[in-house]
Length: 223
Image (cartoon, rainbow, N blue to C red):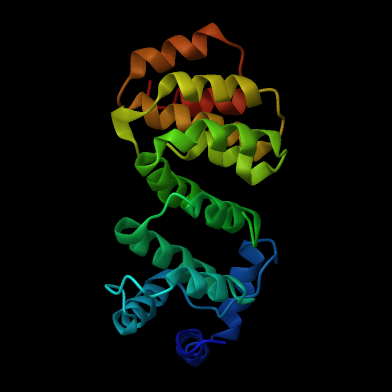
């Protein structure tokens, strides 16, 4: 374990709360262990930790540290890891990061990490490297992997009125027959978000095609 990984483990262990940890693990269907540290406190610990890191140094291998944190059993470490990646990505993004992002989306994967990674990290990457979007969408869709497919629907969530709606519509139509809750929810979520900027287009799309009750309800929430 690297020096920085040891530092953050010590900081998190010092604040471990077993009673809260059980509840936090239960909230995530007991898929992950937890230190029992709630988000506000975790962010304070994270802020102190980031202040110790050489974040302005182009030679600092933040990806390696992200990977180390991803290997921690406790879920808080993955939250810190993904926020570290997002922070450094803005300064040191690289075209080859798509493979690393795919790793994060498919390991220790659940909605709480995937939604952040897809909308924040993958979304940023695709903004900087739009030439990779067709490959990403095709690869993630063909994978049959729930969270990769969900990511193709929500990576534009923060694009506001800059959403490629033709791409989104095509992807929604590709996946709308999937009865998986998280796919149908993502369809509705993506449409609901875009309806803030182009309600007429979303309304027309919803009227033109048949959608599940969940997707339609979510997508038309602001119409």
